[in-house]
Length: 192
Image 1 (cartoon, rainbow, N blue to C red):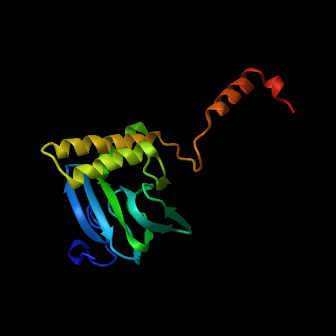
Image 2: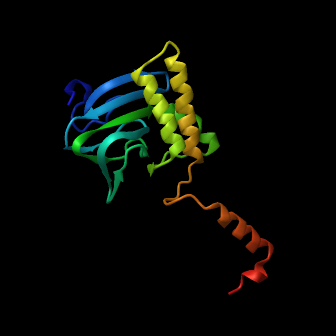
Image 3: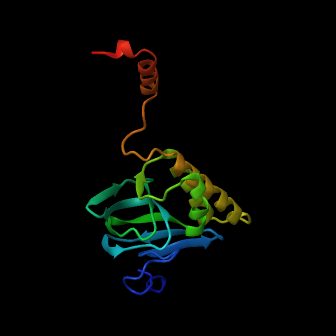
């Protein structure tokens, strides 16, 4: 654990502060992008973060406990945590590696007019994972235009989050929309 990266115990973690070893990090005006590694199994104590942030499990095993619920992440699974959301992490055997994106609260507040809520949500979305992996590449091998590229990718990630259905479970199948349309057009044929 990189103790110099941690605040006083029980204090909220600021942007870019995480339990585990920081393997790469850079910040822009509104975002802090961090890769975090845990080399072995461990329980991370309950804690909160000041800013909302996305976290994607890149490799390993990870379980998050929040309230009475838990989430078992699979590689490339992501979660958005609102600010001050208390949670406890369990790193599985063999450790884990994460990509974390802290989003400045003022940035989220600026999107309030679009009715974008910061709610804790775990999801497996291939488009979001692909965008996050492109962002990871920028952290691991930064180029001259890394900051502007990263900002564009983070805005893309947020847009994909906004479009992601918030209800748990699989996406609605295409045929269901056609059936619902037909039921609305011809309700009499829908009786059992």
